[in-house]
Length: 503
Image (cartoon, rainbow, N blue to C red; front, side, top):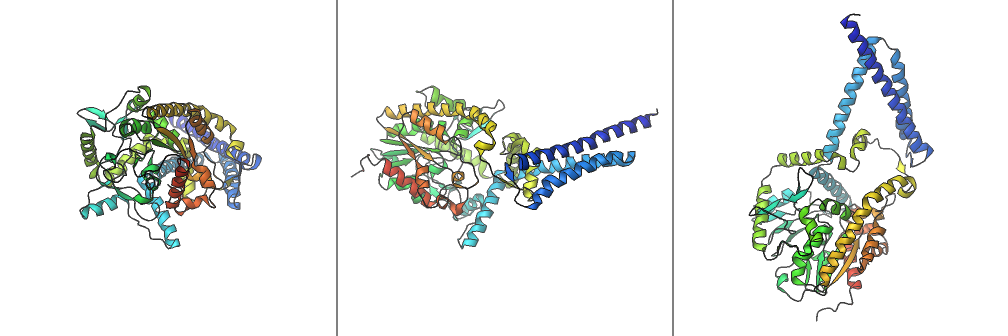
C-alpha cells in the first residue's frame, strides 16, 4: 500500500469516527432531552419551537450523520473536516461570548440598559451614565469624587491565598473601610446615583459622629448596610439613627462574616456601643466566608482573640495608603480595565454560575439567540435531591464556621457589656415565583440561635407586605429601595425597643 493510500485510509477512519461520534452525541442529547422533558417532567416546553429544537433537530442530525457514513470517501472526509471546523468555531464563539457577558462592566451596562428601559416605560427619570462617567463629571466640577470599592481589597495569589492589596511600610494592611472625607459614587438601581460624603474614618456616617459618647448602636454588614442604592438619609441605618442619634454605620461593599468580625474588633471595640447589629445577607455571606478563609490575615481575627491591626489609632496613615491605592486605579483606561476583567474571568471560568458545563452545552449562545426553551416545574428539593446532598457537604462546614465567627463576635461585644443582634436580610429571589429560595436559611438561623443571639428576621417583615417585590427597585434583582429600607429599620427598631432612647 502506497503512502498516499495509507494516508487516505487513516483519513477515512478518522472521518468515520467523527461522523459516527457526532451521530452518537446527537442521540445521547435526544435521550437526555426526552428524559428531562418527557420522562421526569423536570421541565416543560413553553412552545412548539422547543419540540423542534430538542427532539426533532438532534434526531434528524443523528440520522443524517449516520447516513453520511455511506458517502464517497472524499465527501465523507470533507464533511468531517467541515464538522470539526464548525464545532471548533462554535465553541470558540461560546467561550468568547461567555467571557464577554460575564465581565463586570458589561453586566453592569446591560443591567443599566434594562433599568433605563423600564424607567422610561414608567415615566421615571433615569441617569444612564456609568459610575466612571459620573466620577469624571464631578471631578470636572471640582468635586473630589472617588468610586466605592470592595472593602476587603484582597488579591488572589499564586498559592490560592488572598492577601491585602495595600501595604504600609512593607506590611500588609486590610483597612476594612473606604477613603475618608470624600464624595463616594456608589450605584444607580432606581434612577439616580447614590453618592455620599464619607466620614473621617471612611464610612457612610455624618461627620464627627465618632467623637460622641456614649455610642448607642454600631451596624456591621455589606453593601446593604452601607446604603446601596438609596439617598444617604433613606438607608435603614440612617433611619435607625433618627431614634438613636449616635448610631455608627460600618457597612462596606463586598465584605463577609470575617470582615464583619474584624470591623467589630478594629472599630466597634473602640467606641463600645450598647448594641451591635450584625446584618447577614443570605445571597452571598456564606460564599464570602468561603473566600475569606483563604486570607491568613482575616483568619487571625477568629483564631487569635488578641489580634488587631490597630486601624483606629493608625487612621491617618491608613487613609494615606488608601489614597495612594486609589491613585493607582484612578487613571486606568477602559481597555486596560476590560483586559483585567477578561483575565479574571478566564482564570475562573469554572466558578461562573453555569461553570464549564454551561460552555459544553453552549448555554450562553443559546441564551443570546433565544433558544432556551421550557420552564422548571419541579422544585429543587423534588427534582435534585443529589445536588442538595452535594450542597450540604459544601455548606455545612461553612455554616459551622459562621457559628464560630458569631460566637467570637458575641464574646468580643460582651466584653464591654454590649449586646450583639443577628439581623437576617432576605434576597430578591425569595419572592419571585418559579425561583428557588436560598436553601441555607434554616441552617443559618439555627447557628445564630445556637450562638444564643437575639434574631431579627426581616424575611417575616417582607412577607407581611402586600407585595414584597415592590421593596426592590423596578421589582428587579437588586438592593432594597427606600420602602425596603424603611421596613428593615422599622422591624429593627421594634425589636430593640427595650433599649432606652436618648433623652
